[in-house]
Length: 220
Image 1: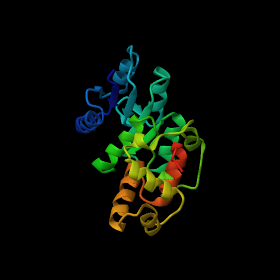
Image 2: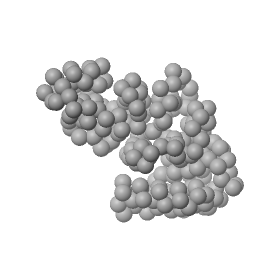
Image 3: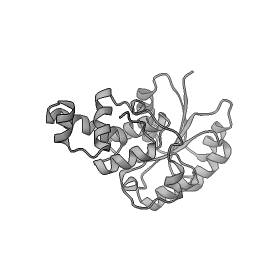
Image 4: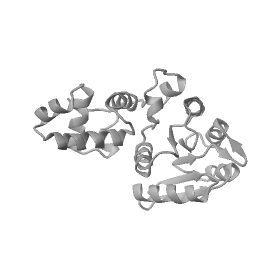
């Protein structure tokens, strides 16, 4: 059965962007659009309800993490992810504590947004790199760690990219990865970039943190 997504944002252009990206990720998916919180709440009360809600924090009838809390109360079994222009860590962490399963900044590139959506629609949380790189580990971050182990293939990684990820997690630099896998350095760089992009991070340190929080099951 095709999945059902809810997009809550008061800007039509955001609707267009997310509809296009979700349709590419999940061909045939049903996508409901809402401009106001009250519309989204009405959609959530339908049976069957959406499988995922993507929401903005700044609406005519709702603001901030309270938007997430209201949606979660209306439909506790529907995961809520934030798509917002706010990028400060305190706001992101408050949203996580309110029950969000992920936070995608609108300042991301289209490619980064698509990667984040791929993670979230696969059942994995997504956080911006500045939060993943934070030394703090408040309740919000601890809460969204995946309870089980996650197959890296669910992130769209190929078998070779999973091998590269395994070696990144072991702390190997590119040159040693080249020797281990008998690949050219340029090829390894391409695979490393693909791994970082799939995890939604900018460097190896953040990749290690992200893999830990996602509970990735990487074969030895």
